[in-house]
Image (cartoon, rainbow, N blue to C red; front, side, top):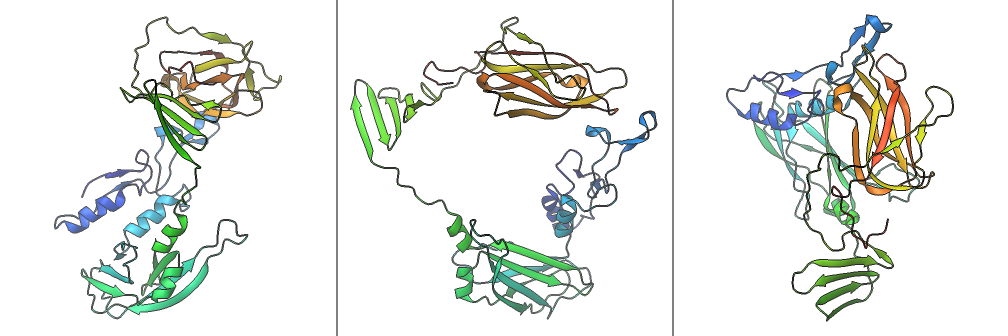
Length: 376
């Protein structure tokens, strides 16, 4: 019986990977169960901060349910995996006729002659105003002999014509305790509907000459070195891709003092808590930013939203979360023209606003090489 086999705080929730663990435990003659850490969200009451509940980062456990036992995603995953009635996922291809394998994982309950109810559903098209699924057909099927701890084949007897029209098959079982168990699977018809349709890309052409092989399809043109196979240029219309003269592996170890930083001075609207904005003298090609916060005594974390813009109109978020004082202060991103940097939603553990000691930016060419043909 493994302890903390799943750690909800680190593993993406109490249900992350649970099915793999549970199948291994259930199939083992020595498997007796396991522990998921932890049942409910918990936090520390900070008497030094007005009795607020501190749940920052890894300082407090994450749970299957919320602090007031609200149902979260992990709850439904755990419920489905631990269900004593299980149906193997069928292969929903053109050969599927409606037969599924049912497992009875009860210790004593016999599921013989119990009813399973099914529905075939069709979803509206993406452009439809109504999102309610259309019920193509409904029915029920009865499993034969299925004592506790055994499995059996269940024939749903689906109408072949309706199965071809439906997007989803839904199967529901309701036990004597009135606890319902449902399964849904996408049909072969849905896969066909969602399949990417071939697009006519226009005329294609191939030309060779002067050590170059050029391939053209519509507005897309790719030129290769006929000897090495290296991609020389890749263009769509009048726009040249940064993949030109590549792709190739490039690595470099930054040397001390090889980064030329631009020290920034932030400006705000005059009120605490409003966004801080830094603008270089002119839009600059950048790929590195540093934000230095002042972590005062007893302030173990702070957070903010970091954005950049090429024109002062469209903002791109680089970071929006919290950090501890030892987490570092650097942010790397693909090289691009930056007209302004904005810091907003500044916050810290005690509810105050962390002071910004400084902000600076740089472009390190060795880290992200930009071909001369690339357009910024």
